[in-house]
Image 1 (tube, helix red, strand yellow):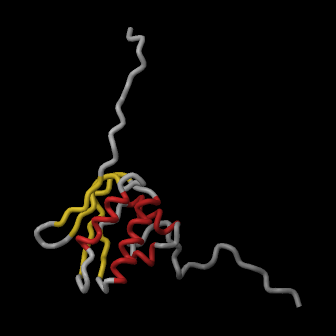
Image 2: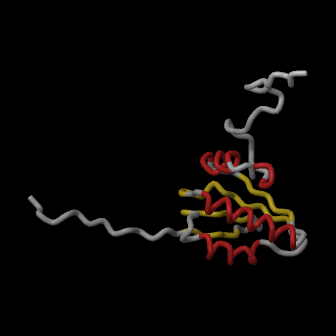
Image 3: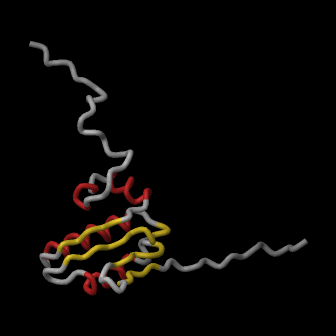
Length: 131
């Protein structure tokens, strides 16, 4: 029996933005508070004046609100540079978070189960005001 507590070293968060041969970009790894600053700096490589840029998000393996902040920052930079920016292959968790944060339309995320159906009847009907 081992009397020492088990020790598991913390593996640092890692993420990277990679350009493929076609000029498309892929975001990979853990997009967290620890990795967002470096990824934000890497944006200058991808967002160029007048360019059309596609970023594949399917390589994200850990995410949260920091990822949304990064994507919103990229969107703002793209608008400033008059660059067309498209995010594809959204991880389900990130898509739900964008919908719950009401930034899904701004980031043009795919439909999710969390997004209300605009054709559905309202869940709660208010009574008309008393006269």
